[in-house]
Length: 98
Image 1 (cartoon, rainbow, N blue to C red):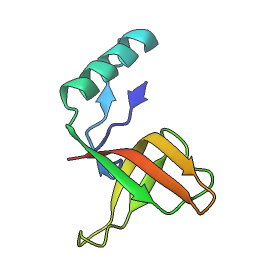
Image 2: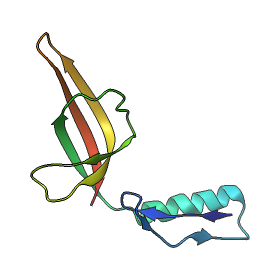
Image 3: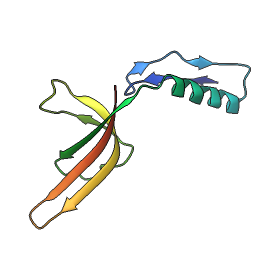
Image 4: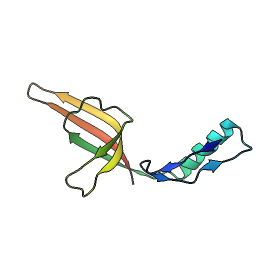
């Protein structure tokens, strides 16, 4: 079994983990340990966005912030929707790899 490793927001490929003599369960545990040991910290971002239907927890989104020169990807960790008679407000909590 070979476990493919991706770093950051899924765009940087890491070296694969290969252990031909380990069982599937031991190999999975080794993969988890490797990923935890090399995990990068996250930026926690909270932002108000235009309401979009279908945003789900765990979804990867691309953020184009006018105050930042380039777009980035982040994982949705929280969704808050507030509905009033005048409009719909949506706040997202995101995790962005550093």
